[in-house]
Length: 512
Image (tube, rainbow, N blue to C red; front, side, top):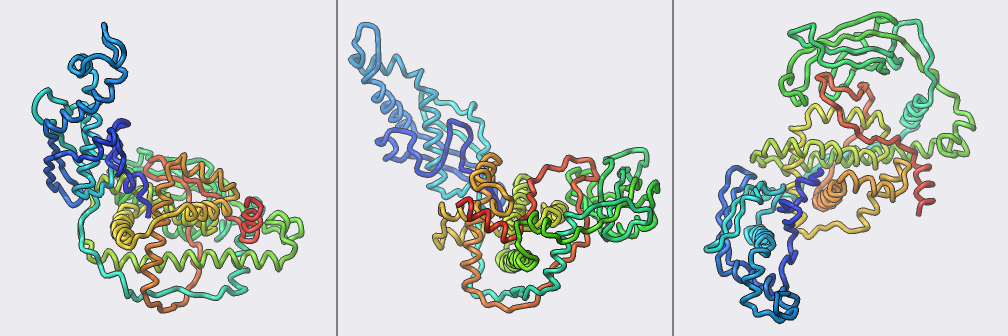
């Protein structure tokens, strides 16, 4: 999972305080001699620590002396040439000006040393009021801060797991079904006078009303295009029996139904509540599939024949099968690792991390070549259980992180190049633009966690035994739409249209 800015941050509290291990904020002489800190740490909860630090006067005076020593060669005082003023006068003249600088350096070095010395393993930035920390004229300098840290736990047994591994030989019927879905994306919607059938599209206005007050509109959306399927998935609710609801709804007809909000909806007051959905059908359309002509073959990826298109579809299905295989194996590994992880995680951490969990899932689906409808269905499903799934993923992450540290698993530049190339190939963007987009959106840490976790899971599975089990591709039974019935704003997710493997190969080769 992705932990990104939550799991990979250091104890940085401001632009003046950066606590990357090994950073030397003072001269080499100061950095070589550790501070004689008095550190007190109290456990507030599983992940919360309250840290108190006291820096003795001797260290404060030493930092002053070092700073004055660095200043002496260029110090200018009236009546003296630059660098020739007596040390006592320089100390007296510049001591107050150096106070803020010394305070910041002491904070930086003290927090860095405390983090390393006490092995705090921070997972968030410290909660500290920098302005309230004073540098006294006499006595020690003391300050406190709160920090979220990786929980302490006994490592589970991760070698020798027995894992069921889904397997399937891609058949011609699989290819035909996938090709039919591909043609649907390029089909032509034409008006239909009849009742909407499965696979037809309706254009509708939707309103969502408070279950206790029918005059209170919680959200509404106009002229939404919806494919008729057994389920209709929103960001914070799922309606079963959608096809039956609209089965007798011609253009101009309004239907209503009860809808239950998910327990993890963005609007807490509405979680688990029953709302009323009011849907007015404006138009019914049916899809006319295009003929697989030479022109369409070129449009799909410069395919020379139907056979070459079939080969590309087969590769695409094999990529998706591999994603399902990795996902199911990963789920079994995760369940085995967290079976004894009874420790709780801070709710605020879960809330912060939930968006990263969505972004991590999208990156995985994107590199595996899923189309945007499939990604949207998965994301809507995840949104409705994101807190529980985030808690599982965070626990799994902490355990995998420990294994990676103990087994010296690390990321390399080649790992990032490979991941970015795969994403670029599927999205049709250049690797340079993909990297720039990930950096701009702060997702490189998500990618880093993804790389480390995948390598660690590969290590775990190399010590596991496997039982092959038959696999069936999921049949899309839900239509997913980007709307929250409670009225919350649904964050935009960059979901590219997947390309077929042959076209991906051509683009990747060209960019190299």
